[in-house]
Length: 164
Image (tube, helix red, strand yellow):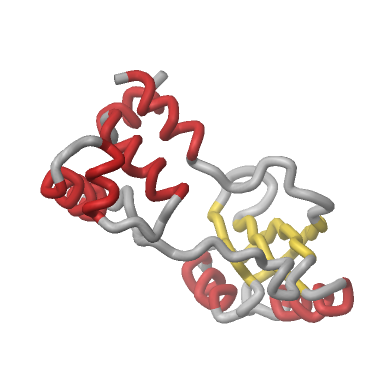
């Protein structure tokens, strides 16, 4: 309930419709967005500026298929690290090209890492780099077999677009 309330405070239906439009067609210009949404060009520009200022919209990167780029293996690692060393470990992990994401977590481990590799041998090389980071005490790695639900925000935007 609280998350729904926060989403409503952050986005209104027009914001959500604009973000859905840009999710589907990120190369659209402001004028074309305005035409498709049935609002003034200045309205779209003001909304984009406000969404960017508030940190909701971070940019328009292309959607890349890592498997098509040769990185067909995705793995996740739970890392236990030395107390008080999260920033240093995260910085070292960010220097490993194949590390795509790092999340600080609660529970069993301290950091949750998504990494990619070209295959099993390459994954071993990447894992060796990860465990070689100073202050990484223990790791547990799992290989992703498939991605039945890829990263997404569309359902949240669609709900917001419908509710107002």
